[in-house]
Figure 1 (tube, rainbow, N blue to C red):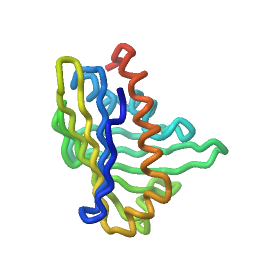
Figure 2: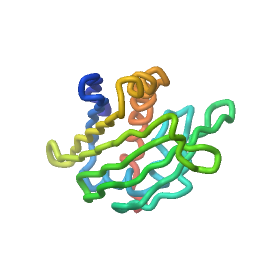
Figure 3: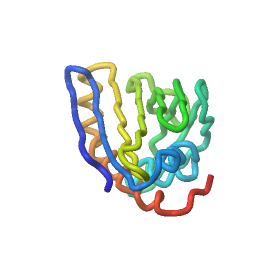
Figure 4: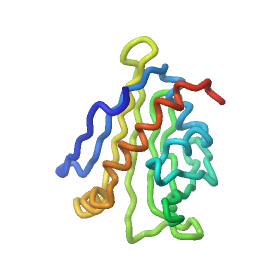
Length: 166
């Protein structure tokens, strides 16, 4: 089914995306837990991701890069602050330079992902990103974050339809 709604809350400095999938909570959890599945949908189709590191545990971290249609590269990092399988994941998120070091000028965001069964074999995923300032939120929206997230999430149904590889 895919995207149900998106919400920009400028007062709360947040952006929320809600999607539903025809798969059990545990199966949807796997698309976050397994870096090979994650890189198949993290990023829009024209900017596929490659995860170089994915230490999926509280206190762990991930590093990845996305490659654009002209070969341009954008790097990012995550620091996992909560991993509560199979229903909740939280991580700090930011841009990185060529060496993988955080780019402080872009600030960081905090993401909260929740998975809940809405009926047997069906999962609602809510992803809420919190920002440091209204300027940062606006800059990310201008960079195409909302459309990019919608395109990325649009790839999940196909992955979930396949047999889990984890």
